[in-house]
Length: 506
Ligand code: GLU
Image (tube, helix red, strand yellow):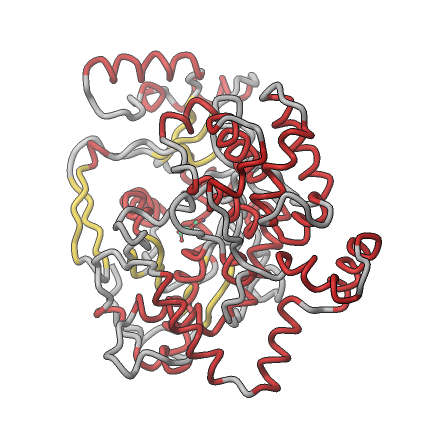
């Protein structure tokens, strides 16, 4: 494995988000380290879209991720929106490349066609579960002769391509931050590289692209560390020098559990809509990477670039402490001139289009000009203060009310596009699912979303507030009733898709 000394080769790093949900603060955190590291060494920072999961990847999510990363103030030298010499930078446009490399592995005997049916795999897993042995492919098709494998493929039998994994021995992953980590091959699965539709999985696409894009340092979240042995094997099979690997500790909730949107908003756009400045958010994330002594905690991305030392990144889970972020954001706001503050505020929420839409909603409902601002105030606020008492007039039992709020929140999360039509469809659908009249639920939603049982039209208001603020307001309302237990969540979401298509990582 190459060393951490970036002297010899031009440093190239990347951030490689999967467009399967809302832009996540974890992506900004990973992007920030990669950006600073590349800049520090006069290298390149790339953005690659890893959309190999065709079911969960959406163009809306990709657009939102790009917009959110631009908002952070980071820039990339190569990427789907800026081009570059190693494109395309969207994996769905590179299928033919991955097939070629899968064929190469098939030809060299480092990969094999697996014809096992889903039923056979399920049977195999059941046996493994009963025996308490690791859940992994048992290698049945690995033993097929090249002739038989070729003949069955030619006859049109569906297959996937799996990588060969030795059944004994160890793989040592030299993690830049963690040092050597040893994995027993016996625990490493014979990973599917190419699915039966001929499209790659994350593992093949990721390794091939990091190689072709000449990535020298792969700095990514700790959740990928268990993939590293598979990746290193692939580099070895292809005869390629692997990049330096480094796995960053995951961001944590204040209670030290993995950062999750049930406990803490995780969307970059949430922080944007709440009125945090991007430089404050990046400063905050930078402090998680490189703590600074009191009095030196406010710094720019350029200053972070100079101070960042990968070898010193603490492995203790960095806590996403919103109180600290508030403090930092305050510092940035106080440092603005009045003129700058006005400009930033205007760009944030007072652009003409938005004001026109609000005026259209309010015009028929006001009697004095002085009514206008109060009637729309909740559209400019972050959270609205609601308590159990705020819902007193809703006539719903607590359980029904909590369910109405929770189902709306989850179902809206599963919507690709968050607009007035989607909101209306989802909220009415929840009423139907609960066997309630929408009229009876509307008041609950009004209170949760606007803080008051009467306000400007609900669906329009929610579209204007956006998915992130609405989700947070649902959460605050649910919290007023003690939240939702894990058991309730399981029961109530039975009819929802198993993986939330949006923001699923949380
Ligand atoms: N597509 C992966 C993600 O969503 C990238 C993992 C990696 O950086 O290798 O985080």
